[in-house]
Image 1 (cartoon, rainbow, N blue to C red):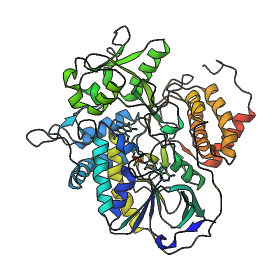
Image 2: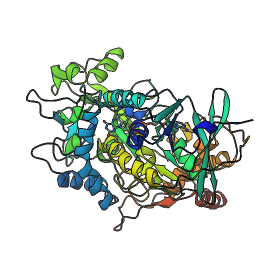
Image 3: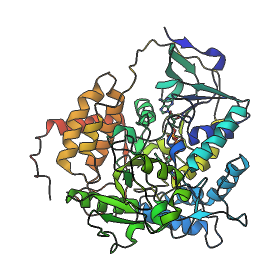
Length: 517
Ligand SMILES: Cc1cc2nc3c(=O)[nH]c(=O)nc-3n(C[C@H](O)[C@H](O)[C@H](O)COP(=O)(O)OP(=O)(O)OC[C@H]3O[C@@H](n4cnc5c(N)ncnc54)[C@H](O)[C@@H]3O)c2cc1C
């Protein structure tokens, strides 16, 4: 029998204890709120792993209008310009707010911001902390602030498994902890569960980030948007560790170059060279490797001897692998890193289901379009948390009581679908591989076992990728390599995904190679 934790009922429930979830909880204070996190705070959040920093127009030579222009250019015409403008204009104040909460950012000796440069930014505008430990420092301060805040109740070790929804409105959360199922009555839920990298074999994300929030929202009837846009980071550390350690772009911002095993610098003639948008660099590295080469980041001259001081985290894992970045090139390869799409929300984080909001990487606000500009994601999570909290706070909070449910839901486990996702949805995609993926995932998503929720999210991404017959930003189709003149955001529901999957299953399988046009 499930337990109904009635003493905590009717409070907003925030699912996820990363930067988005914690900041939303802090912004809701003094309203009592529950934060549900399946792992102890910080243990399984991409937020903790962020290296580069936060993008904000803080420099003397910078302006939010320039930040906006760079964001729109990286997004390949798919950004929502109104949303993007509002978010980048709010970014400098969000950085100041984090500093007030106790985040110690790196400063110059005169007290000014020490601003880094990352790919596709026209100015140095990356605010960072302890060099490459920005996420850890932000999470340290947020976790301390949350633990001090009397209105926030933290439920660590509690995993949300289903939303209880009636008449397209949220009525509660079905969750599980070590003791068994819990039912939390609430009409207000914020999904802040992070990204989807854990659905793939090669990813920089914590393994537990496999899109559970997208499954919760989709099964509750919410629309997802632009989910075919998955960002591959061009420079994950090419070693045996999974998740793959990230070799931040900031090192290329410092002058490091990409070379192959012969020493040839293969990006030199591309516009923007190593600091071209991520999708372009990732494709160049992917193709070089497909030609049989190995790829390395050469930081021997720049930043050179300063490497360990500037990038202590990366320096440490390179050393463990027997590589000294001052004397050795660092082996790198592309890996799934960030999800541009997610739960379709408006600027206040409202989804298409009443009482359901989303914030952070799980949400699709329209800021990133087809390709995220580096370091715009932590910033988006921090900025949007304030607006989401305002909307949650203003929403109706009438008491309600859900019917306790004994629905037994297996703990989700994406391990069987990871190889399928990596085969079907790589840096370069094409129809027959996507259709094979749909055929493989559909029966699993339709079943009710540990792989079903991860398979559902994978299936929805595959169908969205199948439908988008063009190449744009992070979505590159070798069979449709042109970009269509009109950029159209995509939208998909569970029933649409199953209908499309059925059509694909009923169609004649394509023979290998016949998809090229
Ligand atoms: C290695 C790495 C480096 C990065 N560097 C940068 C950078 O420099 N700058 C930048 O802007 N972005 C960076 N990013 C991206 C950025 O870190 C993320 O987009 C952002 O932190 C996401 O925050 P979030 O709060 O949405 O999700 P997360 O921080 O991932 O938190 C998700 C939380 O949800 C919990 N959760 C998930 N499912 C459930 C469930 N069913 N029930 C309960 N809890 C659940 C998880 O346990 C976790 O606590 C990086 C990402 C990685 C992986």
